[in-house]
Length: 181
Image 1 (cartoon, one colour):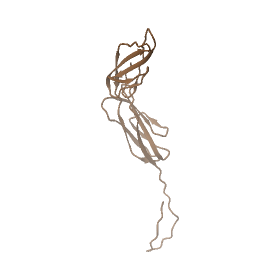
Image 2 (tube, helix red, strand yellow; image 1 turned 90 degrees about the horizontal axis):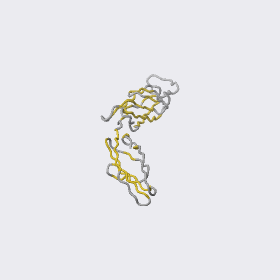
Image 3 (cartoon, one colour; image 1 turned 45 degrees about the horizontal axis):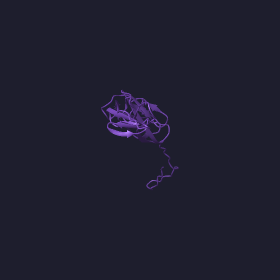
Image 4 (spheres, one colour; image 1 turned 60 degrees about the vertical axis):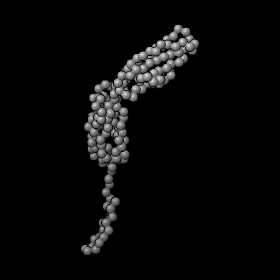
């Protein structure tokens, strides 16, 4: 069993062997709870820290193994969030990645601005060449190698066009309508 990141599958190699019959039953126990019955389970620790995994196997002729116990560490992943405001077409918009936990040290920020552009800076500035709703994505890599869950923020990039109506003859002291889109 290998150390992993919290919320990610633990890499496990089943090295069980037997002398008589064929192994056909596996009982995987994670932190005291039976969690899987297949040979290569996907075990995920939902909390950081030290975890215990145990395995008992049985053969088709009824032989049962002793319980094998191993431990692994689930390292914490950073928790991040995005601060950004709606903006305008071709005008720089500020993006701020913030860490909201104190269990890790972030070594890499990973932005995806939804238009093919990316950045690795915590504080990024980006201009959009098309208007509309942009789905911004951020994750961060901590010094322990764990990558935070992706966070998303939808921002609106506006595009404004002013159109005035035709010229109007204006007479002194006579009201006139002004039509503008």
